[in-house]
Image (tube, rainbow, N blue to C red; front, side):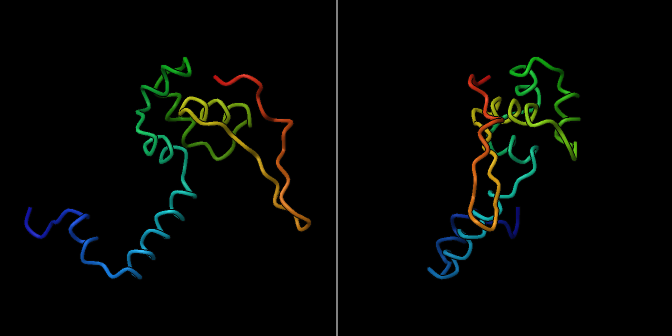
Length: 107
């Protein structure tokens, strides 16, 4: 395609300052992902996730679009991606990790 270049070529031409800003922004964006983006970032399809969870692919789609869900459901979704969920309360006196919702056995 005309006018398209590999990012690595553009990256090689960036100043160190611009590259540092770009890398910083990438880290920020990765830290704020929706569930669907997190699944894609993990390299998994909805169908693969559904098979791990023992549900249908349309149900995975529904879960990814929900504004609210139970902590146990969110933990299972994260577990199906090979991760684990941690809940941290950011309070004026400091950050507190909530352990009452941590499951003893991963998916």
